[in-house]
Structures are given as structure tokens and as C-alpha cells.
Length: 307
Image (cartoon, rainbow, N blue to C red; front, top):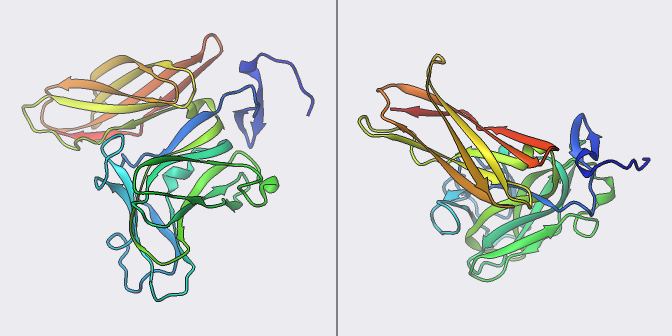
């Protein structure tokens, strides 16, 4: 490929029909959250081996949001399992979640936080490339009985057949394994991908699930969490439209919110007293990522409030 000298803000590569920034040592890694365990969703047990017989999925074995530990926000991820002490192994469980796999980019690493509570376990990650081929990483050994931050670099040393991987790629699955049988709960939080992502994916917006309904006669307050995937702080303009079912706009509120580099911020909207009924909230966030160069916007998944 011929190296064309262009301003950094214009150096883009066309990959599978989507514009991505060219991987380059001159770019600081961006970070994209793929699982903070704060929202509602299903983690599916994709495969397993070495489990005790008779276990119930979602009861005896699961990966989901939990209040069993406290880290940053309201919830952490709890991975509960029980390996058979009389079995030969291998001892392994693999969980997948569709929503986790939506973020794609030129990946350089996976960051996460974990507390294994003294259990002798390791974590692997499954990467899916642009041709839907999968690659399983080397294990990351979890240690101790306190929270720690971990990082797995994505390169030829940690990903077998890395040279065959075609980017952009995504995180397909989380794998927990042990050399010897054990059982209990391992806690995870804030699983992030690092690398280069599309402009659209550098700013994310999701509801904070405090309530799904509101008592009549009380003000309706809704909150949304903004995440900034860039190293630099950005100021976002966040607009909320509250509508009746059918499309009539009852409230339109705009806020400006500063989001720290690689950080998050929660924006709050006080809608006041609303008549009894069902409503939809449409929220859009936009931020200028670099003066006179780029602009990123993000629309939240539709949130319904019943009052």
C-alpha cells in the first residue's frame, strides 16, 4: 500500500465497507467497553467440560450481573461454576453474549478487572475476525483474593495463528478454566477492548437501570452513562426527547457533559411530573473529537418508562 501523506484526521483505511483509522504507533490506543455488567442481558453457556453432573444453568452455573461484590458501579459480573472433583477434566466453561461482540476494530488488547476469591483459575478470550474465524488467546492467570486489573496483549505471542487474523475483529467469548477441579464464584468487571475503532464507537451511551417504572405524583428522573473511548477528554451534547406512544413529544431537554479520557460520565434528566401513561425516551449524544476534523454521535437504545 502506498503511504500517502495526509493530515492525521484523514488517514483512514477502508475495511469491509467501514472506515477505520489506520493502526499506527502515532495513535494512542482507544478503549471500548464491551461488558460492565450494568445492563440487562443474557450470557449463554456456549460450551463446557468437567462440570459436576446435574447442574442447572442460571442456578448452579452462570455469568451475570451481581451485587455479590462491589467495584465501580452498582453491579459486577459473577461467574459461578462447579467442576467435578472425580472427573478427569479438562475443566472449562465458555460464555458468549451477542451484545459483547458488536464492537469491532483493530485490536491491541483486552483489559479487565477480576477477583477470583483465591480460586486457582485462568481466563481466556475468543476473538472473531472479519471472516468469522475464531482465535483463542493464551490463558491469563487470576491470582489472590482481591480485585486486580489485568491486560492481555493481542499479538503473535498470545494468539495462535495471529498472522491469519483479519481485522476488524471483535470479542466473541469469555472462557474460564482450571488445571484442577474447584468450585465457587469468580467476579469480573469492566471488560474493555483496546485498539482503534470507528468514530461512531468512540462514544457510547447506555441507560442507567435505576427504575423501569415511576410512581404517579413523583418526578421522573432518568440517567444515562456516557463512555469516552479516547485518551483525550471530550465534551458531549446530549439531547433527550420524551414522547408518548405514538410519537408526540412531551419533553425535549439538552445537556452538555464533559467526559474524561478513557472515562465515563452520567448525565441526568429531570422530566418533572408526567401524566399517567407509557412513554418512550430517545437520547442522542454528539461530541467533537478533534477540532474542525471529526465529530462522533451516538443514539441510545430506546428506553421505555412507564408511569
